[in-house]
Length: 351
Image (cartoon, rainbow, N blue to C red; front, top):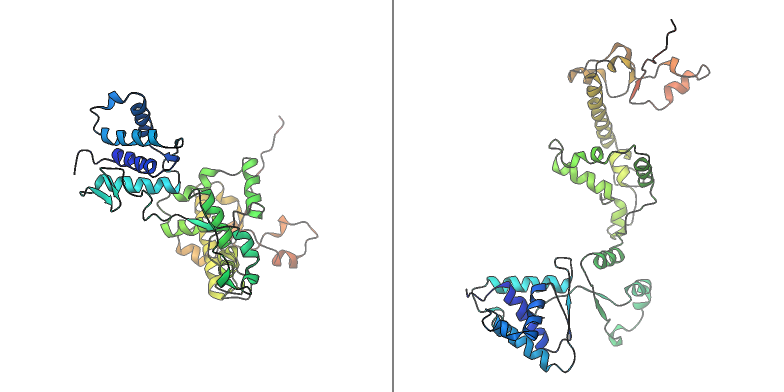
């Protein structure tokens, strides 16, 4: 491996190849290469003993003999720009190989060869939106005599690729008009939401990695369900495979009416509530304020060594918490809260 076989030389060789092959607009992320080329053009005597002097001379000669002005551009490195990412790969390969060539047509010791040999660029067809809208019409035309579609290179791997993938696969962007998004934004504005608490599970060692993935999929709307299956043309039905209701991420986590799934959802809910109950029990004073709870059977609570306050034996909310005209039927059939805590109110005494 020669002393001149470096990434810097590979970048200079790529610039030299582009100049010699007649390219007038050349972009590179190597600011040092641009400074060295400018130095070679203005003060060539300073590069007489430079280790890459032969490449500088080739570039300067090609620039002076060029029939049109050559423009150099400095671009940001590692920003998803396709040509720049490929150039980095080629430069590293040429710097680490033991051969004097990195690719058969690009010699590291000289500027000969095509710098774009065997490079694949991401591209999209021109007016893909119109082609999607006229999909049915294209099947009725004679495609044998139609010209091939024009291809437009995607300028980067970020915004352009994301927009193209949304259009092609119907993944869409986040729905900011959804209820959950609106609720959370309201909590953020009034200061109720705590970002550190809401995202604590990401750094918790008690939460399994698979569980973290499921939570992130639910938050980002990528938890696979029948809506995705229909969008990806893998199904024609939006109905849950286990029950007759419409499938969704919320349906999977808390709405499926299948017997086994329903029992799993209930037990998961009770498990979370029992963890909250255990935390309340550690406070001492608040435990005695619980007047009702709906977090599973008393037998399960006893198995987990959770002491049930005498005031919280029943799952039914006490009658004295309701207005006098509230019927027992409505009290028994209404939705039951997980906990009901009644705390004493401080009173002022006059002396």
